[in-house]
Image (cartoon, rainbow, N blue to C red):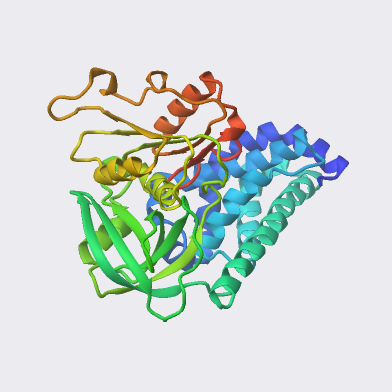
Length: 404
């Protein structure tokens, strides 16, 4: 992996680089988008750029990878790499774009750190970057090839046209879409818990890409759900793609999707499963629950969901119906401000101390970061090993590199 000489330099300079990463990443994006404006309009999420979350995720991934190389020089952090690779392939990042990133990232590092970037320091961090980039491109090539082979497509272009065959209003701000391939080819393979990328053409000409979890598995179709996002919720500008889809996408329309990807998918087995979500985070877990019900699973399944109230709870009926189809399943729902009579021990935020968690449980979590942190802590306190706690987060992953 990392050469001994470079390992020494990286370990010595990691605090300096890590301390300056908050200044390096915004300058990097500024330089890259100035040279390649098409990347901002047609690839990177403009909302995440505006609220700074993409910068935090990049900083976290670089620091986590470098730290892992120092801590375990004879191995590489495959879980970290797999998560990033799935995200990259799903939006169509190509191998040649790693050279673009390298050029502008290292220019930003030199500009921020100045004389501290000696030739020796530059060479060591260059080695870190290409170790990470080459590992990612190898994983991404494999993912593209596998998906292309399953669909009879060219690995260089996995985007396909889909026709909207139905649209359902789940709540006031959540809409579910059913889509089928418009090219007549079979559906791509998908696992419960994965997501699809949707490419939307916006009024200003930009072709922005967003990822939406599959929320079910209807025969002959893909199903994904979109929640309207406001600046207050998103932490930045209104969700331009989600709101655009809700306002304009109707049955009969055609849009382009990339095939399902995602490293957090329901694993096969017969051990107990905990599915814990908050808000629209229940979309991938609803797909997992539907998959278990369709398979007639006899596994012990515990579902926990937190929401504002009954009206904001998307897939509330699905949760009841799917749980009833499973012989060893139980659902626990917490509402912060329930409407009407509601059990006191299920009022407020999700509290797993009131839920029986079977020994040997594998947990899947999805929701806002505060929810993920809280529930993960409760699971660890209950004795669930960190390796058995899997999570999906919407947007840039600000937990990259942690053992969550």
